[in-house]
Length: 55
Image (cartoon, rainbow, N blue to C red; front, side, top):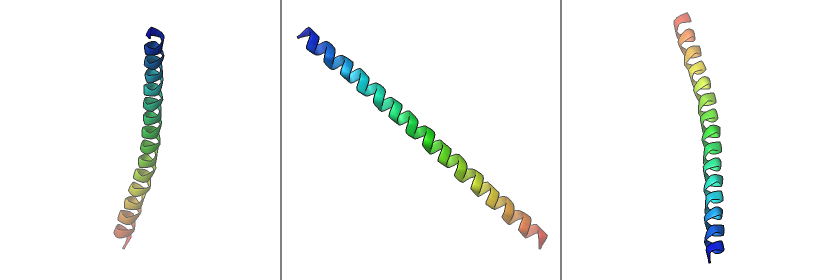
């Protein structure tokens, strides 16, 4: 019984580590996508403003 509880506990810790690693990896990917979108969007605003003032 003790071995079974210990095995279950270690499995739950491994699962928790996997879930937290998966969540962290997804957050890094999401932040990278948002940074790229933000750079593109600020570039478009800069192009729009410079074109507006050239007219």
